[in-house]
Amino acid sequence: MGRRHTIEHKIFKNVEITDAGSEGKAVARIEDKVIFVPFVVPGDIIDVQLTKKKKSYMEGKAVKIHKHSDLRIEAKCEHFGLCGGCKWQILDYEQQLKFKHKQVKDNLERIAKVDLPEIKPILGSKDIYYYRNKLEFTFSNRKWITEFDPDTEMTEKDMYGLGFHMPGMFDRIVDVKQCHLQADPSNAIRLEIKKFAIENDFTFYNVRRHEGYFRNLIIRNTNTGDLMVIIIVNEPSEKKINLVMEHLKIKFPEITSLMYIVNQKNNDDIFDQEVKLFSGNAFMMAEMPASHDLKHILKFKIQPKSFYQTNSDQAYELYKIAAEFADLQGDELVYDLYTGTGTIANFMAASAKKVIGLEYVQSAIEDAFENSKINNISNTDFHAGEIEKIMDDNFMEKNGKPDVIITDPPRAGMHPKVIEQILKSAPKKIVYISCNPATQARDIALMDELYKVERVQPVDMFPHTQHVENVVLLIRK
Image 1: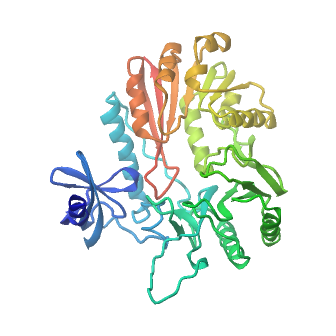
Image 2: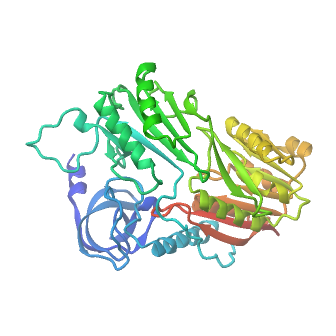
Image 3: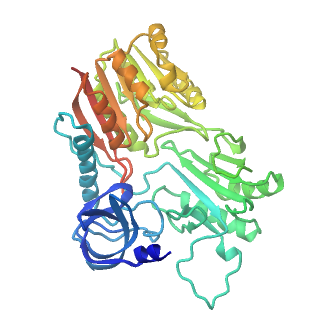
């Protein structure tokens, strides 16, 4: 107890923040060690209270700011500093882009340690607010109180909140009044549901006791004007759900898909739960110009559990870069690894002889086939399963060795066996799209024997966060 007490109260004075680091935290150096501090920016001079001390790094929080950085701007969101998202919104957007570019460069140089071409300037997002097409909110009977008055009596309903989790607290919610990430009527829908629930004595979920009626809210929209609202509840009461659904249907006639899920499990995962349609369509439609012809519009069917890039406009820019790097001539066999719902595969199909998509999730593959069918694309094929298991010698003997591989793995990067098989098949080109430059750099190092890095293009999909996408073209040596 004594040691913990000492760590939590140790304060370092007049510390200069020198860099932007991982997880949206800024970086300083104290006693030859890196210390990570949230909600400050490079150039700030602060007093830091130590909160965690590890062998190779420390963590702390700013308790006083002596000098504000010239790079600092005013946060737009009133929830900044509590909500776990948009941690970089006090940093000018052009500066955000510089640090993201640096993040890509540092990872490729320090982890990949391969010869690199000049890294292209990062492609910023046209919209830096209201750019998301999907948000997930959580109901809780324990919201975070920002202004506590011991003389004010708090009722149970006063503690109800609907918003995002506090960082590091699974049972506390920031009760969001306005979020600047998704266009209207997202905020209005969220606030109306909360108001209606409280007025009608609906209970909010208690994650510790696993009780309470309302659990989660998902709002999705597309560039065609479709709007999907999914409410997740804890009890199979038709009377209750009909009451709130009918209210939303009348209050927001622009909702094109109104759905609910009864989830009685102890976790929030809904992928094994039945989605019930209350009114409207069972899906949404999104549109995107094709890579080969901007006048040709591709349509994508998005179901409640379907993955679709959450920044639609930047997704199109990302796919255009991937298509430019692939530079397909029409006679190539393309493998699209981690294809998801087949968006990239269908986007590039017209420029290839054939595109074969591989994906872990069976339901995503069903969506991929459906999207090919909707767009009258006949030269795609999709396979579901663990990619490291299905992409073996037999698979390639049956389907042919790829001329080009496009890979867009999750944050953990590619499985070592997938890399082995890529090297064995030896395609002429690999277009590697990544949401994690560190694991991308690790994988590139593993392929260095056969491939050289030809082009690098970072893309910002998520303004005001530390996240950055990166596209790398690898050419067979």
